[in-house]
Image (cartoon, rainbow, N blue to C red; front, side, top):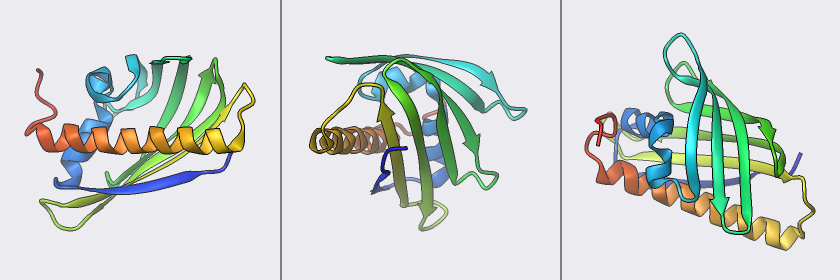
Length: 154
């Protein structure tokens, strides 16, 4: 498995609202970078996604892949692993939320490890991981702080 990268960012919102945005896979194409489509393939008894298919188009890098999700019972973290992919042979990641109070702010820590099917020079791979993580956290922050009710339909 590839090395893990971790970044954190403070979002001015309660953890429940942040996790609501993270769990709303149908809305990802509206805010999550180069994701063109998502499809929830399976849900748990609580209606949370257990498996999701993604279609990514980042210019030269295009991929269709599926991830399996595991939700923490305390509502403060979610982790995932790759089920299948075209350009990836492994992916492991997580969001961990650390609320500073009931109404926020909340520190969000994003951890990601991706192993591609194509060889990539270490320097370029680390740069790509940093861009992916920066983008994911900043877009999550923008989505959460700019949307007073992320669960409401647009």
